[in-house]
Image (cartoon, rainbow, N blue to C red; front, side):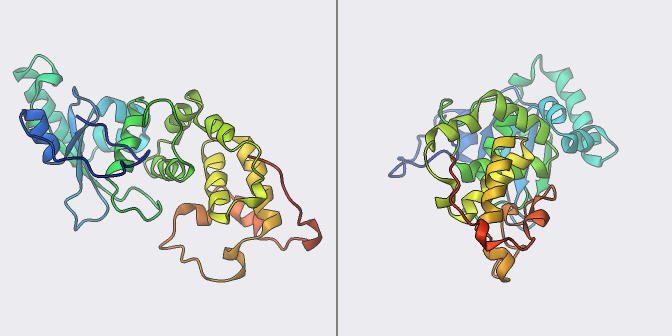
Length: 266
């Protein structure tokens, strides 16, 4: 089955697949198998009124990577009790979780993946986030995600208390260094404010000091449309328009116009 990802879309849509196996039928029905041996179906919705998207995942990996999922799947919540009952029955029926048909797995629903930017669907960003929690390469396994996608994935990781795991994943695969290499020689002052904010958010939440230093300075010297008017509706905007960790508040101070100067950086 094709591994869908945020890293780009083909120039033309592919021909509809021929459904000839059970796995193909599940994919056609909307199930994305992040792990073929997964013991849980995770239904992710943007809001309560939607059907959402279904992913086969390993509950152990989610719990190890995220305190949100640890509490949800092993605490006093009804979801945890339901999953435990299902798993006990499945262990008595099958020798391995990989043998369990997807429609027999317990299902847990979550709503809202965080203050990401406007996207046509949350299906792909959710899939890439879950791949990261399962320590799977994103995209073609060689290139870093585009900055906007990385920023959105960081926001999702923050939403599900998985920043430590996601940061380790990103740093180990050197995705941020790859992005720096691609943009080497381009002055930070030439970047649009939204891109500056995206990189600042990533740097702050994923603990990447070079980006925090460079892009906080760029924001201070370059100013922000957000500080000058109410054009940005925070309730409808991505999290990078309200950078956390105290950085945004520090930057809202009046700056000295004489300090405006080009800043070199990637």
